[in-house]
Length: 386
Image 1 (cartoon, rainbow, N blue to C red):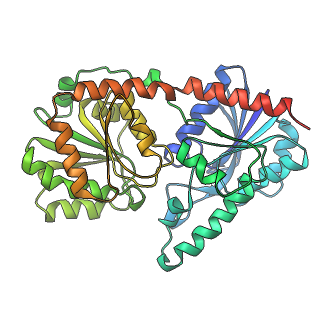
Image 2: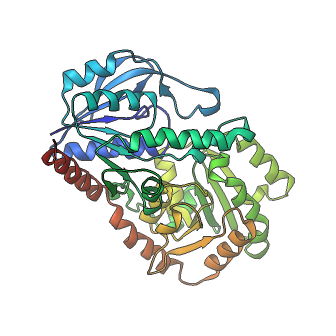
Image 3: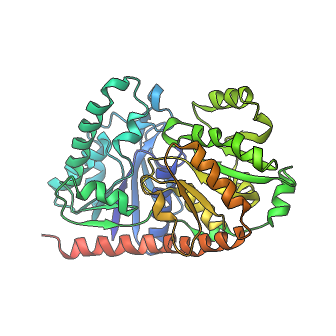
């Protein structure tokens, strides 16, 4: 079985959860004997191989407002040529881009089964538009664009109940399946105790409240920053660490100084995977204030490191707070509610229990299950091909 994965963003191009999810899926499928070809963007046109995955790269461009997500704008007849050469059994489209639409069109002409995975909603894109009064118009337009994909493929998938519902309540889809983006849980084993990790990061005797993600309005890091003063007033050893970079970084740094809380806050910028693992192992609590997550990859990573979580009560994030209890939700955009939840969690004596519950619950999101479910879906589409 040969699968063509179509995604403008594929490592090392761009950065974010989509790239990581798609590359992890490709590599895991290969491990299960599936031949995988990827059609993606790149700085130049080329064909390369990485971890037994064949990658066709078409030259991409970057928009000033969306620099972390370059996309393929000019591909001419290359999509048609690649599909004719590779003859995939299934075409799996990951993003609603021009490249994705061209691939959908060519696959339909050849009666190749199609899968579309929802990775982004209109509100994820609207954050980058400078013309705020027209966001509702662009949002409606983007939903219609998503619908063209959802209603013209053999099956749609999404990583959460929330995300899948956004498709099924709006569009007539042939088949809808929830499949987690998945984590390779073998990559998240603890190398150090919390005390050792804190020492390596020069954070001894501090309780780290960790955020990992882009510093952009889409992720609402300002809400977490707004909770700092109240938390520190009751827990002086609390240290808020923001791992990641983005257009809000300078504003957040300035605000922390203006509020007199800079000593309790750290902005790491981009860091290596190894250093990021240290922060996960040093943290006491992980917080994700975003109200627009379709799953929450960094939250699942924190759970894989046995961290209690606090997430906004919005989007798909509440699905990650389960029973037995592994954390709390807070009212989205409410910094006071968030601060109170952090104080409550840090003040409880059962952080370790919450963390163990996180670890147990994230096992259901193991990458092996994700790959197996996709293999099952692909095979069913081929068996029912007409």
